[in-house]
Length: 489
Image (cartoon, rainbow, N blue to C red; front, top):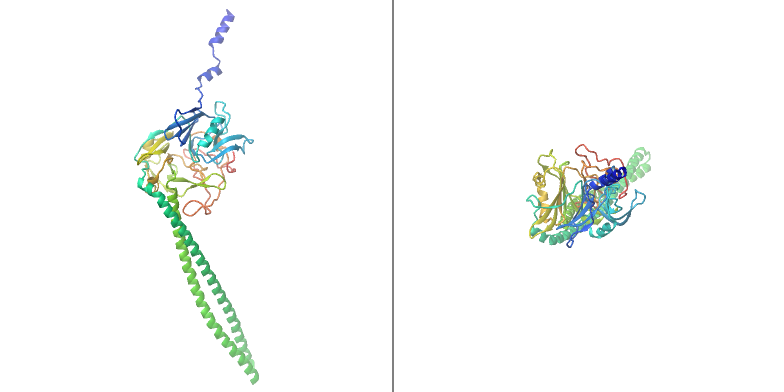
């Protein structure tokens, strides 16, 4: 009887650990959509369900389990984009660990990459994907693709609103020819600057030569004045007629010499004034020509970038609107450079009220409009209410909206931009009310001075480039304590 009771208990009683496993939700499975996949527009990582899903214009296309950051090294929830791709990356922080098919999303070391998946969060902050899945996605994912890391399971939903950008077909059609014409004007402006600089250089050399002549004649005249003074002293002291005659002769020669040098000096000084006037005129022309070059350069580059996908970020924390466009120019330290020239104050209704984090993305263009999706990853207003609270600057409506293209986006958030946002990122935004140990424990990417071109965003020595990292809601970003190497992780 006792034996039968023990056997029955063994059959009917489930150990606590086994019970926990049974209660655990089913693990995500790798899957492809049952249709032909388009180009990926967005990837959403769900920390809650440990899953990544890639989307094209028509919905999800690829799905796989992931392993995000473990306790104390949590993967931060927020808004990111692919900054760099490396087929065979090895960690510079974690014992040369192999991180194949890496899709970098921050320069201080967060990325999606192939790695072991134990079935739960286990990384140092990155998002591990199945090795074969990461390899498959590596070539499919474009640079700059949006990556959302959400605390919960979310997905894009179709969205329409009159508050979103409305393109102008005529403006779009005319833009290629306009960009070409403006590029020619910019080239002509560069040539004009070169001519003006040459003329200015010639004028300065002429003025310098004229000034040297004046200085030389002043020296000779001063010497002649001395000779005359000496002759007058000798004449005054002379006691004989012969001595007086000799002294008088020296005095007359010195006087004649002074008169000649004075005439030459007056002419040289007049010439020097003329040359200085020529320098002033040349400087004015050079200044005006340079201003025209900057204006032409800005117009040409605005036109060049007009048909590129544009990302707009609106922060309730900073009350500012930021614009990013990928220039597709390689940065010397890795990745690509982004145009960062537009940054404007923005009015937000009820600025003390949370607004949430909402990502509006153009997924396709219809006949004369854009098709948008929306994803909310942080609580606050619903998407339409959030849009209604934004008073879009007229400059954005004039410069950005008419040529908005697929893959463009508008992001609205309570958060400031992360300090990881710089000239070679799109936007890096982390949710401050979510754990971010795997982000906060990494050394912040060092500030760098970089070349900026007047009116565009590079080819001239610029400022230290960090986003506003002030915390919201009393949270600390925890990334101000150290410096790291670009891309080390």
